[in-house]
Length: 495
Ligand code: ME8
Image 1 (cartoon, rainbow, N blue to C red):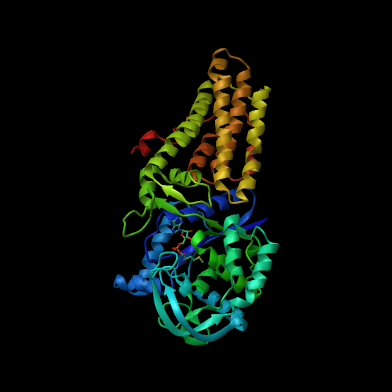
Image 2 (cartoon, helix red, strand yellow):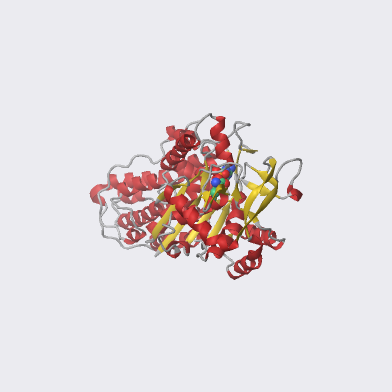
């Protein structure tokens, strides 16, 4: 079973921030879930290094563009590592393998390419051509400043794909998600597609157009091809991964992925991805994050103060994936104190420490009472419940499933009062503690894609490898646990 997932590749004209970390962590959570579920996963991320915006950023720093790219790409590599992103590939668009792939793609599109002149507006911040009718007070709808452009350019016959795209959306209702975004894309395509300028001739920081060195490719053609490069294009048959591929993208770049990208792939006769999922945007304390306001959230700083797993959890528990969210330290602290330290941390700590203390009292002889049996059934069903959410990229729903089991397990501890059973040397203790181990083991697997380091600690306490969901079904046999230490020590998240 194959599964493929991608993040956007990030522009390197600024430092990585919480939004970049967000998209990467989302893809990482899904990739980790799928690996634990027995899939062979290809997960790619990377940096988008060409285009006028990056060239200008290097100039502003008085650096060679290549040296600037190396320096900035490293920051994105570092943040991926810091956020525990277990990608199979980090792709830089300046690598020779990618330049070769982008040029091969261009050649496959040639039957739909013609030369003309682009005369119109361009938004360098978004690297997007903007229609006159969309400009308000000199700004593109996204807020970027537009500049006038007149130059010779190659065009892609996008207009020829309008009906084919609409037919494709109709026949593949899950191709664009969430549904509200799908409707926006369909409305946009129905309003009429114009041919797309796909080369620039006034600067040279890009992939040279095959056969015409005066032009470099429009940065979006170059960037989108990264998904194929990472799958070994043009040497490999990409259908193995493309047919199972989910592109995670921010809502602002959905049009490039859901309109231009499938049109390019159709033109080249290549398979389309399975799905494009557009997620929402984070603001900070109610304001759009921006360098000039000085409120850009640095994931390194948050991770230093609160922990990587804590941040990973917060981002997907605070706001349903797909919707916009607002980042605040107070909200993060609340999640850590209530959901993590109180609900999850205390549960694991008190149960495992108690088992440790009971030593010889707790044996593998048990006969489940109804409540214990129900808890175990719930635990064994957790991954099934989560799977349907993960397959819809509903990461929030998947976490709710885990916390449903956490609450039930906490209630079971309170109701069954194992400490009293131990005092009375009641044989029910075996049933209660065995059921609790089953529940905690399932919870550890449930949180593993979201909080891999925390799950690892629980796996270690319980002598579990933690490599596959199939391990959940191993019935508990009298185990000697090491003394657990708190999963979320209070002092690491003091304000
Ligand atoms: O658009 N909230 O790169 P980019 C949530 N290179 N997510 C955010 C965010 C925020 N405030 N800010 C950024 C590009 N993101 C192109 C992509 S793909 C072939 C080329 C995330 O550096 C979000 O996923 O502007 C967004 O789509 C991505 O970073 C874009 O990053």
